[in-house]
Image 1: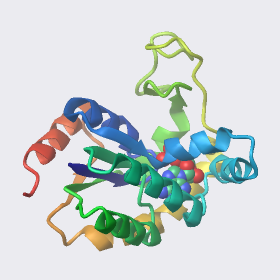
Image 2: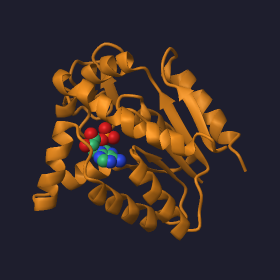
Image 3: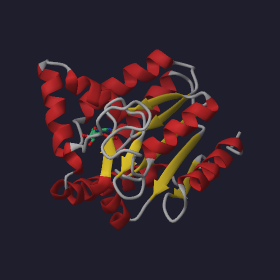
Image 4: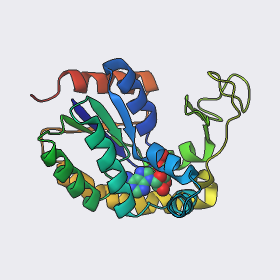
Length: 217
Ligand code: AMP
């Protein structure tokens, strides 16, 4: 099974993809996570990737596609949920080529749709656990003890690209790109849109689970 979760930054891709990966025993593949790991390396490539991530800009396709390609080919016929990729039309075409190589198809492409104003609210208050246990929000989903992860006790941090001045620019740039990805998939049976707001996380999750259980084929 291959599930894809796409959407703008702050739409809840990570939160939902992680929950679905646990429930359906899918391997969680996140382009952001893979790239952040690469950025930690003290190499010229790591430095380049780190620079893009810090500014909230897309890492060049050449680097991202190669990384995702290696990961998907490594996992081969395992069940997986891919989050954060593809983010533009070039990545979409590359993904299709990778899947063709593997003689496999996407079972479901879920687009988490959230209004821009809500994304800004979410991103500006977002706090991250360095061990990626859970994503918090200072107002909507605060940890029990301020600044501390409920699950592992690590100190939470604010992502550099979640700083107010970078958020709007990040959303605007991603918007144009994601529209092209949506256009590519939207007439296919596998494409489903879920509004990722106005409801509790649990309700959205239930909706997503239904989509997976009733997926085409
Ligand atoms: P995320 O964790 O998905 O918010 O991603 C963190 C950062 O990694 C993004 O702001 C980009 O700099 C980079 N990134 C993640 N996914 C992609 C992608 N598909 N293409 C290019 N850059 C990406």
